[in-house]
Image (cartoon, rainbow, N blue to C red; front, side, top):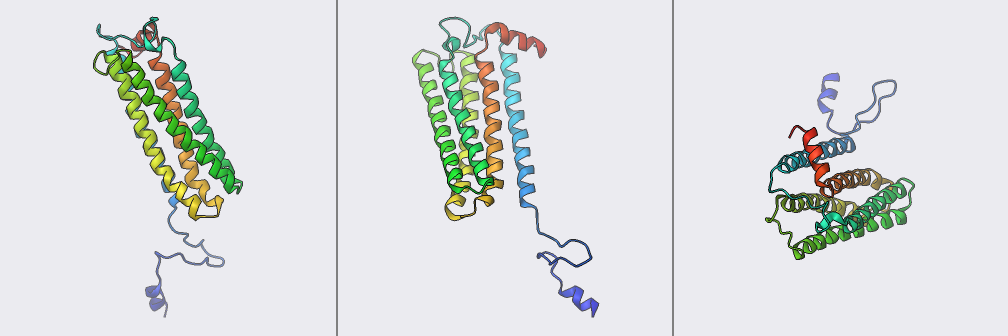
Length: 227
């Protein structure tokens, strides 16, 4: 009889807990798998930007490299536009955090407000970055006129693509807000999105500091890297 009972068991299905025995199988840990996947993605993105920064510092030691900050006529001698864009991205990150806290506290309206604010400020950030591209081109700083220009367009474009990818993933959370009335179920995916937004904010701050550095600072960093 025990043999037939064993053959009828379906271990791939969730089994009830056995009194006094081992805990029942609760199914795959999808939340844990998602966290591991996010860490892997953040590691890959971090390596990509790290390699870009290393090549930027290496290329800066060639005589045709002209930094975008330092001299009065350089576009990033005045970093007002960069600070404005940074403020937009910081507001998006804060919106994500507010939505996450609201979801954990069971406040669906707060989650909607936070997510909506994050999407709005992220889109504004991307538009502001594109407007900055147009501003640089109007000043004659084209993509192929100086290696520093090329790196600026490359770094901001790659960062913007990652932001747009985050918006695509966040759209899944938005659908869950519409079709799921339980805000607590949004906390796990919203936590992943919030971590991603905070990470990209940190990446942008590094890029901001690098692109607005004076030639002396860039040369010092390059020397520290052995270039």
